[in-house]
Amino acid sequence: MSKKESTFINMLGTLLIITLVSGFSLGFVDDLTKGPKAKAKLERKIQALKIVLPEFTNNPVADLELVKSEKAKDSVGMYPAYSGTDWVGTAVVGSSTKGFSGLIKLMIGFKKDGIIKNVVVLEQKETPGLGTKMKDEKFISQYRNIDLESFNIKVKKDGGEIDALTGATITSRAFSEAVQMAYDEFKKSKKLRVESKK
Image 1 (cartoon, rainbow, N blue to C red):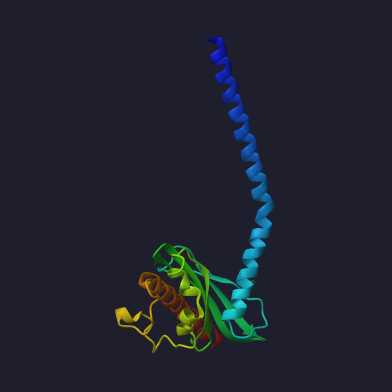
Image 2: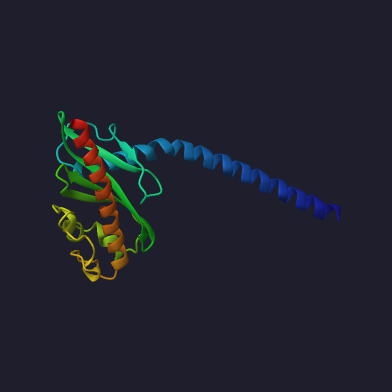
């Protein structure tokens, strides 16, 4: 009987030691990779800003403005772009939780007149081969050079002007919703910029 107890205590002790060593190792590796992960995320953001904004001379990341929105859980990131002292546009991070697999996060670049310059997908977990086609040029090009004051951004199935992705109408709707949300925040921001110049 004491041999069985001894074996059980030994196994329990061994398991405890393995768990502690694994926990410390994972924590150490996580600490080592935090810096490179943050740097890679920042690089992706900078590349996205270069794609969606008109040519700029400032550092939009340093000029980041966070604004509260009723349509987002977190604050919405707005990256103003300047050429010298002239404001040329703003990149806005728009999001929707109504994608087929949840969150879709986009960076939408607006020229100062409100026309969309470009869109980049920052985050998504949609179905490979269907919803992930939101990154394709054919789909994104529908959103370029449009003014949402005169363009119905809904999918055609809902009476709008956007061709939905085949087999991924839910994803297409969420994409348009994220763009619309970003535009609504841009309009508020633009109004504040114009008023502050007076």
